[in-house]
Each structure stands twice: as structure tokens, then as C-alpha cells.
Image 1 (cartoon, rainbow, N blue to C red):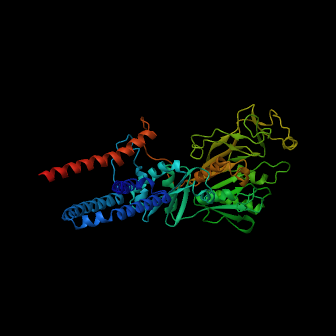
Image 2 (image 1 turned 60 degrees about the horizontal axis):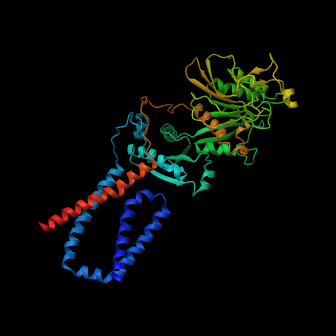
Length: 514
């Protein structure tokens, strides 16, 4: 019985070592599990060696041991050569892609971007365990194009604190690092990851100057009435929000990627409006959010300035009697359908609510240049929705549509403007009819923040890829079921090695007989 236990212990420990080696690639991402199993199997091997110590000593002195040792040395040398080949293949990967449209190959544009990068790239999948596989598969495509791409994974279920530090609003994201800078990509696609590399490799900080001094939202404020969550999300995407007091400067800084006017409550001085006019005349990128003002409209001159360039933000309230927050009487519309042809909103699947929103529209411009307007989020159609212009009714809490005075729905509450200038070039302006949709109090309304960040990214699209030159595909991608994945794993990890081992034993026995 004792000898049977010794043999059993030896076999179990050796089989455990072999299985651990075969499965290491599958469990290495979970370091605690991997090293715990390695330590446990190591203890089994030591225990097996201790219980079979005399047998090992006898085998050491036996003549056959030298023959086995010689063969083991040859086998070890073979494994070393195969290991070297495997290492070279890992550092310089190569594959053939026979899928329609090269579904498993990065685009030529991405290949050119990676080829231009001189420093190593690190792609860190930040996700829950169930979302890890597709992220790592996508990262592996980048490593196949650039051998010094480092791939890592952070499990959000084990590190929930990182979700807060990165202001992560989705269960999966890719942290792209290059040249000492990093950007968090929440919309997982080759296009967005490649764009992140373009931004990071440019070496230029994307600076968003935000006006202050007029009651704007405070991006540094951390309570419910602040917008620090929005600032954190922008920072994670390589945007830097910098406060700018217009009254204390003579012009917008030359390094401004865009100027943000986000929710002013007080009026602008004449000299401040002149600074803004000069910035727009030079083709500067503008991101503006103006709320309706009940009573006196203190920011009417700012609305008039924007209207000169075709950007209409009315001082009216968009009412939606069908799609709205419960108890708001239609004054807080909820948008569930977005512009699916626009880069900023084509992938938004949820809903965005606008607490007391103005209407956005294109108006005749007083300056040269053609203005193209695209609405991103609309209210319902009339008679369910309209823009209420009688602010006295708004103040009383009882609003009704008045023909000839109020504007029928649908009404836009967010839109983009492109000005094609006579001197050449293009200017982009993003306008929102509400600024408070990104308050810290609404941090759980992730699509609110996605809409704003996507719109800002669109406004700064110069130098970034808008789409890839890929052929249209008639065949869908192949998705393996869990059973098929397990079958493939069993064949590659267990069955195939056992077949080769059986063949090796057969050849060995044949040579012994010969």
C-alpha cells in the first residue's frame, strides 16, 4: 500500500507540473491563482522526491540512468531550441489571414502609424474578467505589427478602485501608453486605439481652455454641483482642462486646442466678447453650452455673437411631453435616438437627459463662409414636443404651446457646426443647450458624459482618422460558442500533445527492438 501511494504521489505531481506548464498561458493573468498552483505543485514534487528518495538514489547509481540522462539531455536541448524558436516567433509574430476582408488583420493606416512610432507601446486591457478576451485579442493584433508592444490586463473586479481613479463608466476599456503619456479608450475599436496613438505620438498636449468669471461650471469642484468627473474623464482621454479668465487676458492662448464656454450665468464684458470674436474669426475650435435663463437673459450678447457665425442657441425651453424624466412635466427631456451618421453619436446606445435645455439650430450667418449644421440629439416630434419661448410660463411651471410664438418639435438640444472658410480650412463648433448634464450628481448617467466627450473629440478631429479604407463585407464574423472554445482548447492543450507523446513512445520502443 505504501509503494502504491509513492507511485501515485509521483504520478500526480508530475502530471500536475505538465498541466501547469500547458495551462500557464491561460491562467497567468491571474497571478495569485497561477503562483498558488505553482507553489502547491512544487510542494507535491518535493514530497514525492522525499518519499521516493531511496529509489532515486538507486536509479542514480544504475547504468541505465546514464542512458536515460543522455536522452534527457538531448530532449532538454531540443526543448531549448524549440523555446528559442518560440521566443523569436513571439517577438516577431506573423500570421496568414484568410478571412473575408482581412477581419483578423489591422488596416494599412494602423500599420503605417505603428511603423512611424519609435518608442515601445503599452496596451492595458482594463475590464471585468468576462470582457478580457476580446480586448487582449485586439491588443495582440497590434503586437503582431509592432513587436515591442507590451500587453497587460487589469481586472476591475479585483481592483474596483481603478474604475474610480480612471473615471471609467464602462466595463471594458483600453489604456494606451506611449512616450510617457497615456489615454484611456472607452470605445473599443481599432479606429479609436489608433487615434489614441496618433494623439499620444504627436507630443502635443490637447489643451481645452474653459472660461471662468461668469458662473460657469467649475471643473475642479468635487461636490454634486461641480464637474470634476467630467474633467477626470477628459484627462483620461489626454485632454487637459485649463481655466481661463477672459477679463484678465487680451487673447485666447495660442496653444489652445479648443475654447470651452460651459454654462455661464452672468454677462460678458464688451472686451471679453471682442476676444471671443477674434478667436472665432481666426478659425478657433469652440465648445459651448448655454442654459435657458428665466427672467432677464444675462448672456443675450453672447447668444447674439454666436448667431453672427450661424450658431443659434435660443433662450427658450425644450418641452417633451412624451419622453422626459418622471415628475418634470416635460421640462427634462430624455433622448433615446441619436444621429447614427455622426461620428460623435453613432455608437451611443443608451439615453441622455437634458435638465432644462435650450434649442440648438442653424441661423443665417453674417460672415463669409458656408455653415453645415448636424443635430446630435432631438426631442420628440410635435405635438408632443416644442420650444417654449414664454419664460413667464416656464417660471410658473405651466407651459402650453402657442402657435406663431413657440417652435414645433423636434427640437435639437445638441449639435455640431462646420464652417468652411473663404480663406480655406474648416472650423468646428459644438453647441449644447444645457451645461448641467455633466454635473457630478449625474455621474451614473454615463451616456451624458459619452455624448460630451465624443463631441469634443469630434471637434478636435484634425489629424485623427475618421474611418478606415475597408471593403464592405457580405459574410459576418465567426463567433465560437463556449462549447466550441472548450473543444478547441482540449484539442490543442491535451489531445494533440498526447498524440505526439504516443508517437514518440512508439518510435522509442521500435528503436529498442531494433
